[in-house]
Amino acid sequence: MYTVKIKFEKNKKKKARKEVAAQLNSDILSETLSRLRVKDLLRFKCVCKEWHHLISRREFIKLHLENSIYRPILLNKSSFVACPRLFPPPDAANYDLESTTNFTNMVFAGSSCDGLVCLLNDEHGIIHIWNPPLRSHACIPITKPRGYIRCFWFGRHNDEYKILLGTHNWGDARIHLIRPYNDDGHCSYKSSHELRNNYHYLYDTIGTLSNSNVHWAAVSRRVPLPPHVSIFSYDLVHESVGEVPIPEHMRGSSSLTEFKLGETNGCLSCLLKRLSSTDGVSYESELWVMREYGVEESWTKVGISPLDRLYSSSSYESSLRTRVPQVELDQPARIRSPFYTKQVYVESLVSPRQGARCDHSRFCCSG
Amino acid sequence: MAAETGTPTTLTLKSNDDELFSVAESAAILSVTIRNMVEDGCAGGVIPLDNVDGKTLASVITYMNGISAIPADEEKKKSYRDKFLSDKDFETLADMVLAANYLNMSCLMDAVSAKIAQVMEKKSVGWVRRKFGIENDYTPEEEAAVKEEHKWTFEGVETDDDN
Image (cartoon, rainbow over all chains, first blue to last red; front, side, top):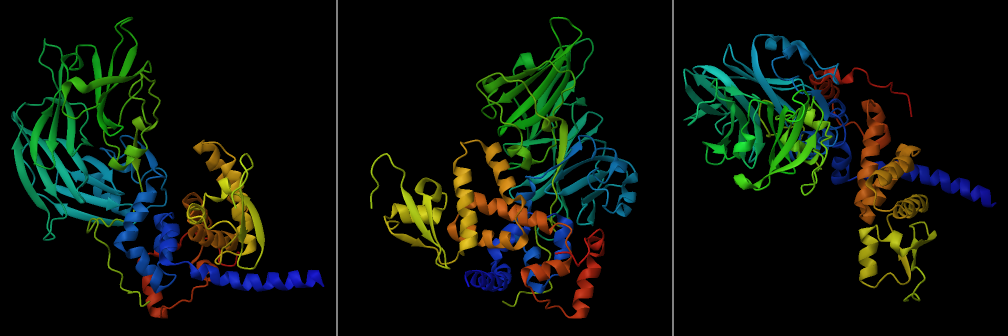
């Protein structure tokens, strides 16, 4: 008798459970669906109108992006830069390559933010913003600035995507601010600022965002003087150019071979690579962190490494901040960050055509 | 009501199908819902959990005991969670996500959501409708249009008849 009862109970439960899945309210459902990859989500728009609406919502796109950060796709640092044929990222062999044929012309630079890849076609003065897994792509024509393009940055600041272009034209160095998703729907090609100091050679063309400023490390090589490094910055709040103070001993000597900017524990940091002072043959790397933004005295050496192939990526996504290993600021530490050598891409549903604005679902939720 | 000093306090939880479970208070307060009850002093008798059935509650309690036995080591906790969820089928996971939501257990909620997403990877639209008990409310024309828009996402999808 007892076993029969159990059996009956089981059947009843199975039936009830089927409805449990349908009970998932939209918060729980969003939480679950936001862990899926873009390809699955786009397919599941077909499930029903409610799902189509949910997946298209701005709040959902944001939640999905936040969860995407925990499954970054690591790329070799230079994948987005000057190597358009390396598109798509190695992990994504199924991405459509058709649109990449547009990029085989000269591409000056590119970087990614929120799953959007931004590329500059120097020759034609076109900016491409591309979301590879979404297979969506936008071309933004810009007035081609005079001179050579020397530095670049694409990222999000105060919920707005911005592009910075640095040009150099016969000693006249300028930074141009481009807002691809302006309020009126048109790209704005805005201010141009003359840099106080000429920059001669850049350690990295892609800027580093920290403390609402984008930074580039530049070096002047005036033979026979030793190289002289400076960090110049573009303040995204005040839209002005400035310079970050660094102590004289960091500015370099003839032994300095690398000077890479990054962000460590939310502070602007730089990785120096120089010839060892002891044997003059091997290389030493040092990680320096500016603990208090803008204060020269706050630069602190936090890590040291004997590895000779250690580079920092100046262009990892701002979202990566949480993924950069936390360096113990009070103790010199060995630098072992794999992320420091990689560029990171995270998938997202963010439309390259409208920035963070959502694609309107044609199927409004009736419930 | 108050336990003698030295002995761990035990709580009694009751599922919506009237099964009773004993669980150490230290493990049960992983649930914010239960912790609030304990703090408000209303956890003395039997705690009825109206939204959770016995089978799911047994699972959740296994998880509570397992995870609270692990000291503060995020790596080990993660591997426990992975192992705990590895053999659960979709229906069980769906029950657990509802229970975790009701009991307000964010760590279980995160882990189960991630696991459900993992199970849903590469699944067909039909599979999802069946498992979630969703009725297709598109007209054939509408459905074809949505499908056409994202045609490539249907490549490499698992066949529809699996369970």
